[in-house]
Amino acid sequence: MNASLTAIYPVSHGLAADLPATLAADDFPAWLSRHPECCRQCPFLPELASLELACHRLAAEPVDIPAAAREYTVNPSVRLLETGWTGLPEFLRDRSLAPQPGEALVLLYRPTAAAAVVCRTPSGHDLLALKMVEERIDSRDAAREAGVTVGRLDDILIAAATRGLLLAPRPTLVREASFFEGPRTDPDQGRVATFTLQWHLTQVCDLHCRHCYDRSSRASMDFAQAVRVLDQLYEFSRAHHVHAQVSFSGGNPMLHPQFYELYREATDRGFLVALLGNPMPAGHIERLLAIARPAFYQVSLEGLRPHNDYIRGEGHFDRTLGFLDLLRDFGIYRMVMLTLTRENCDQVLDLAELLRGRVDLFTWNRLAMVGEGAALASVEPERFASFLAAYLDAADGNPALGLKDNLFNLVLSERGRPLTGGCTGFGCGAAFNFVAVLPDGEVHACRKFPSPIGDLRTQSLLDIYDGEPARRYRAGSAACRDCDLRPVCRGCAAVTHGFGLDVHTALDPYCFRDCLPRS
Image (cartoon, rainbow, N blue to C red):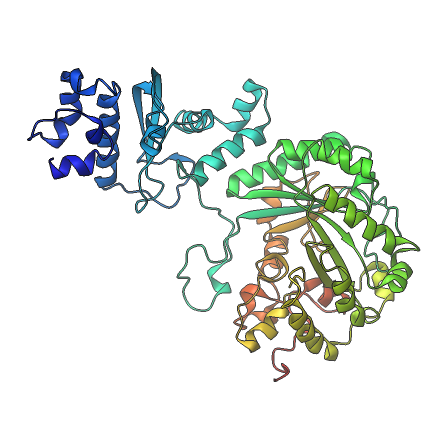
């Protein structure tokens, strides 16, 4: 047998009968078509051989497949072959799956220049994705025509790009080069893939916590205005090629009179959705799940039972533990947040141990002495470094303990361990990979302190993001500009503000970079 024939046609040549001693490899499919007597047991052999030849040629063909494109683009290696038999790709993988007569398409492509050839029967979603991109059909137009949600069509495009069928545009939200020491060697360093809008839907709340940072009487937008907020986020995510997330907060977001309608509108646009709320009855969660499963549901605990109930109200601790069990039963990712104060600092690790196996993630924020939180006492700065060190030691044995505070990186750096992304994965992400929207549409760089950067009632999210106030918050404090940990740290602007300092010029009062405890 011709060696090249064997290499190019590993399946079809072994199924053909009475082959001549010499046969040009490229002529094999045509030869099989002219000699049907050699294919009596497998009448589909000519087309199977043509498919194997196409796979071989695509594998040998030098194809420039860039890692990204300016917009969704069909992978230049994509080939769609018409055949008279169904199931040919499946037969190549499993000889028990016999092809059947019938018109069919076969999809061939290389996901990357270095990848092996993919050979499979295309799905309806594959063909739709190719059609939308080739014909430049906008997802919103296609959704209206087909009577489906735009999120469903965008998900089809994203899935096609994930499989390498399409080339996706690279996200355009990226830290400035000045954030990093030396030239940027990785073009994706500091690049954002997800942008979060933390939306305080309502000030209405079934609790009155002693450290609440905003009890102002802001009216909520009407439904039409609220839907326009979601449209603004959609336009922003398309313009910057990022995945959008809406974290519904409050108050208690589920007490907004049109919460479920807005939740559906967000999921219909393909957004990731999450809740930062309070314990709720099972019926509310069932109604939520009937629309879409949230990415997570975050509740708060402020220490062990006596202290927590002093801060959040009698019986809150036990209700929250029961609610965490309810979320587990519904299969919802469970997060617990704690606000770190002088009074509960010594309870954090005991609470974390009590929550072991009961939550998926436990994190904390330092108290921002804003609003009613100004009446509480912050952790003593001189005590903070040793607290972080003890928490890190505990986290090594408890996988639910999250490292959210940016200043963890000071200890990690000292210990020679990999750094964490900090509060948002990019150090302080205020006005970078997230913004907060208040009930009336006012936009802030961070939810935990007054940091107004615009108003969605009169401005677009795109314009707000590019505006000077947002740029100032993204730049961070001038006090951090010479620190090599700046890309993953920059402290906490809300805490800095709570101490009465200028967040644009002052150092986080808890920064201990020059006085790390030595082991």
